[in-house]
Image 1 (cartoon, rainbow, N blue to C red):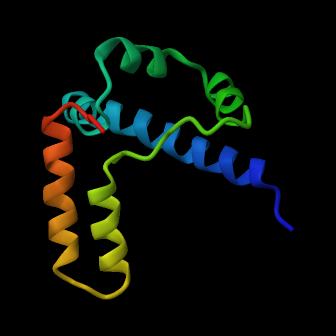
Image 2 (image 1 turned 180 degrees about the vertical axis):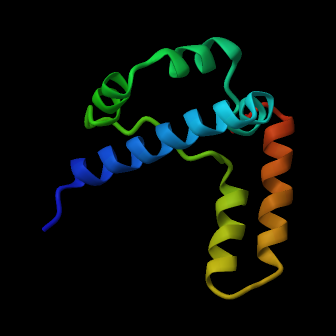
Image 3 (image 1 turned 60 degrees about the vertical axis):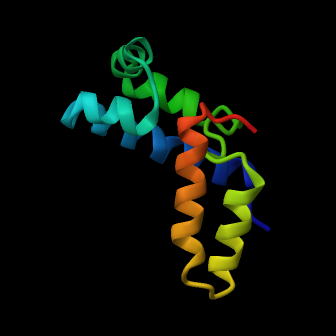
Length: 104
């Protein structure tokens, strides 16, 4: 049986690296895509690779599910079950969630 903490740590590590690389490539776009502010971006860029690794391997999932509304996940489930039109519906529902400040 695999270690769930290992999977969480690897996910954290990959995401943190991806965010940092994105910030270095195009800071403004990364701020918008990841919905983070400049202070957090600065902090992530100031961390040494060892510090970033230590955070990533802290056995705590650092990222959560982006969408909180049931309607988004319901549409995603329908898409997974083979209903092609459900994916655009999920994206529309997700966009409404973003414009409402991620309210449940």
